[in-house]
Length: 441
Ligand code: 4AD
Ligand code: MG
Image 1 (cartoon, protein in one colour):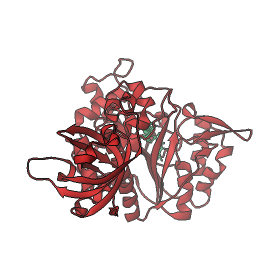
Image 2 (tube, protein in one colour):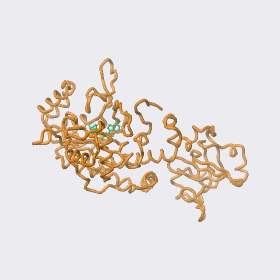
Image 3 (cartoon, protein in one colour):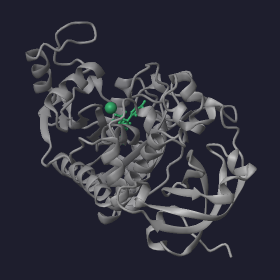
Image 4 (tube, rainbow, N blue to C red):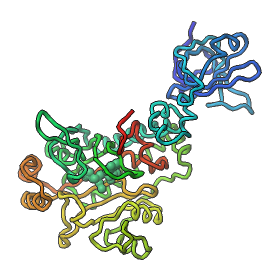
């Protein structure tokens, strides 16, 4: 009798019954003729004890970390004073080793890998993700994506899947990855925004969770070449509506993730100081941000004072956000430093109805705006940007066939996670991060 096959997270409900569990040896020690192994199966950790003859067999004595095993036995609550995951342990009555790991080899020990040099960490990512920290971040990532989707579902916003292979740019030609598409030039998408805009009259408000690609030359803590881009587009709304929606999306998702015991305890473990942001978010106009930077003596990358019209570089943005210490809606960027499609502020045409959401520790996690709704101003904007309007005919048509005031945004999932789980770089929030010089494993 092999007992009932369960996952480790069902252990508490299955105490005192014969159960059958499959997993990997996460920790291993022997003590006074007993072998203690902590088993891992993705849903949790379970201490198992081999005793008596079972602890003296060749297989038991040569067992190694990261080997895969099957165990059968009964889970018993631990008495006071002893500790193990979930305060219980499984007394093994039968077990077998399914796949023995080499052991000894440092690369095969996730504890070693988690503290190793950066480049070898990256080469060993497939083993590093077995570790407690890396797997905790990835579990929070899953909970966050679920939370976002639940928020959108609550608001009746539909999920779509736009293409990754495209022939139009969205955020400037300099970061496009180009490839040969049956003899034609094509790109990996930088943003699905233009496609989402075309969905409004077809499906109403829409969102997508799609990979975006940027040939970033910069080696920074927050730039990846491939990242998961959560984007939404909303019709018949004002800039104020867009900001209110963003606040709800972020706070609603955080509330959902924290309401779930597993993800809430993982966040507590990764980021003990995390506090859910309070509403309303601080608002700051771009021009006031420039003044703030100068008042606080924060210089441009070239070491100069900031002027209205300048882009706010990553370092300055981070210093400002960290000093202010709460989420910020930074609004009203100059048109010259922003993308071609952004709506101008009526009466202040050099500036746009745009917003970046800035979070302490990371800086920009969201970029959004209202879009131009008229054909002619869009055609002028292509020209100004040096974009050939022809391949954009379908995007321009959006203004011809029943235009409306609309807006949307893109949220970098890895940046959101770096903020939520207090990671030093976005690389830790990606399963297999891609950045300058790294496209494997
Ligand atoms: O600010 P961005 O470039 O805006 C857009 O792409 C818009 N078309 C989105 C839209 O309105 N639908 O990118 C949006 C967000 C940034 O705020 C950042 O969080 C993330 O995408 N992002 C990156 N994350 C990781 N690595 C990179 N190289 C990123 N570039 C942008
Ligand atoms: Mg941006």
